[in-house]
Image 1 (cartoon, rainbow, N blue to C red):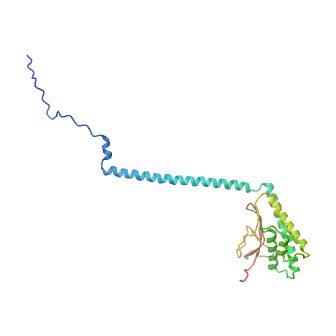
Image 2 (cartoon, one colour; image 1 turned 60 degrees about the horizontal axis):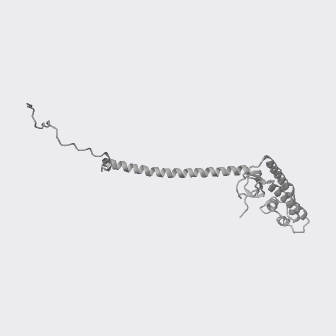
Image 3 (cartoon, rainbow, N blue to C red; image 1 turned 90 degrees about the vertical axis):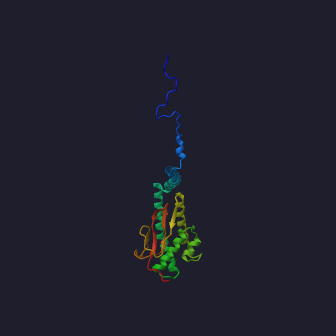
Length: 243
């Protein structure tokens, strides 16, 4: 006969027959009010904001760089288009030489003749002023006409020197037309600052004027082609006029 007990076995000391509860899901920690995680979240938010700001600044700088590159490219194209070819440069050198010849050998003697004809003395300042008036009429913004040259010379319309005035007008208009025919931008530059020291890079004293004295007015303009100086200005220098 089986002497073994039919009673249920006793539970070992220290153990419970109650089933163990499951571990809480791991994502519970993200909803935890733990201040460490709240501070981390704030830092992440600030970093995201800073990143967006930096991206915006970067996009702006990239656009500025593209604009600058476009501007430089346009300037380079303009520079190439405005740089004279060797043949055009030689042509402008020829025009510049003839312009100086016109001023020195034709305008200057004509100014002396008109000054003497009107009973004036060939004093330096008035004579230089008369030359300046004539070069302004011949090489200013407006193309010269016989009437404008006669007015600059202070002569009536039927004066015997009218023929010489007409020849000056023809010479000046011929030089202008030849310069236009090259297709290059050109100018007779009258810009100056009264009372300023002589700028030796673009100015020369006219005739007996002294280089160390301040500039008073332009006697003959510079000849400039595509921002390149072909002839310097001739300027009258001297002590400032009394006010």
